[in-house]
Length: 230
Image 1 (cartoon, one colour):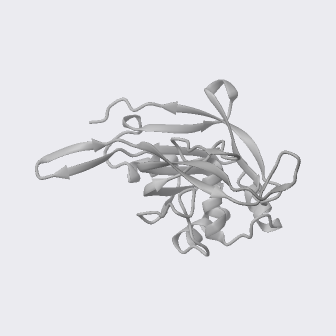
Image 2: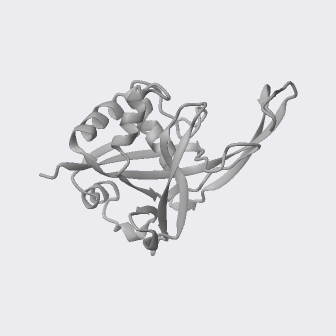
């Protein structure tokens, strides 16, 4: 039996927000869950304090894992009719007080920020090459989390249990979670080991979640478009 496992998460909800350049006024959402957000969900399930040594050690133990996010198409039914639900972005705005200016001082004026969300998105996320003891911990805690788990923001509540199982291989996870359809029937984003195998670089690998010193690393990804939606 392999010493490494695959942990699967189901990220399903009416709205989700996966920030990839969300530092300032415009806080956009990517079309796939970010690795920062997914490992943040795992940290919340484990009950690890933000910026703590336990959290940094946990993130360090997961530095070598590879993530795949699979977009699940959704259908709506009305009698004998059915149609696909398109994932779309929406945007709202907030006003924020006591923000820092470029000089480092605190501004007393309210600042408007724009925030994006995905509507009607549904994902299976696979975290591969996790050492068995850590995978066992995640299995327990994702099924019975210490803290709340959100789909990017606290307003984005999961509509299905987040934990979707522990598996020996990615292939076995796909066979169980995707039904009779092959992976190539779905659009998915896959993390790769070698730069030449990817098409985009994302700065979304969490190294430290501390509020005053958030640190991220980069990963290389490729998106595979679905070959057949039928």
